[in-house]
Image (cartoon, rainbow, N blue to C red; front, top):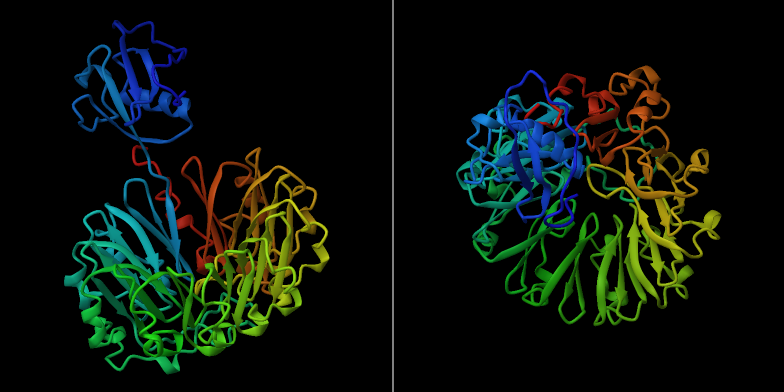
Length: 575
């Protein structure tokens, strides 16, 4: 209905025979001018909201507001007759922005279509936002997170923070710098950096980190031995209750961050800012790439993009060369492959401890932690050419070649060993999914979507690497795959959702789990159709549906139980 101009739409109406009224003909269109309802005849006694209902039915999209011919936002509850509309007037429909959800390790924060924010989950990790409730009542554009705190950017460029003060939830000491002008926020495990419109940067963080996460019982050995709780060597020297810019940014770096910054990249505990002249400024934990003095001359210009492992950076320059710094064991030392990285590199990918560079001839160069993908000698011939894209988990790489085949290497239990599905991966692979790597979650399995709509999985069986129980359902018709807190969820062409993966809290009494007030079967029924996106904390997931509702499941203390805010999560500002 909304695909062309001047198309006539026909609808049937049930008029009240007792109404004594004439009819009015109106047109509803998008701001682009594309008609939704063309020459639509309606009783003027009907509320403007009736037009919204019909327009939503015609487009399948949710509409948040109508603008009158004069550009004034209309009251949807008023009758058309009292809205000063005339015959053949054109109303402009504004689509309701989809709900977006951000997460820390144990909490969710949802931005609704009206710009208000709803939080739930672990109170100390951002699930309790009562102290800033008024500031989050409207105008929020986007929310960012560290491990246990949130930062919201509003329409006026101001910033609101909440959550654990040790992880950036307390921004009082840089508050004057955050009252406006902020465009984007970047984050590490415990610090935020706000990029302002004038190209300047404001950063703040917490100090001594003391985390006790009793909801993540994953006892498997992680690739990165420096876990989220090892912070002894990176404590600021200032008062641990006063997170200021000086806590994370040395004085000499502040001058370089006063303007000209275009983009910021992050490792676990450090920042790397690329300026308009192609130079790079770094700050944060030296062991995570916060100090780049040894390569300062190479970073003085020409940098296009920066990639990172947990504790190292790799900068791709305009001439196709690569510069690395940070923890040598985790990719910061690339001397062994220096000649191969001197030119021709087009893109750089990473696990938590290793890098993989794709060159213009389709060949791949790897370095860093050998067990985490830095050593690719066993598949060297297969990576000599034809590689188009590389995907990764925490400890493994998966390369898709031009013929649709897949080559894997790295930690076997996180997806580096795909021998059991080698035949299925010999061709036809279009895209590979894995849980986004980061300090909030772990990524330990792959799910490949093939051209025939089938899915192939491998890696940690408890994190989605084993899909045998739903093999028939994944044999075709899959359109997209989302990662959940402990596996994957595939959306099929009929709108149904197929979920697999082991419980993130395997071994615990099932009574400790709260599935949104229901059991897992009830959740499965609620996810039977209309799922648009799935978000996750470490031990819970939240699905946003096309009707604006939210379905949550997983551990209650990690955001799996949203019953207390269920009414607020109905994303319809005109309900």
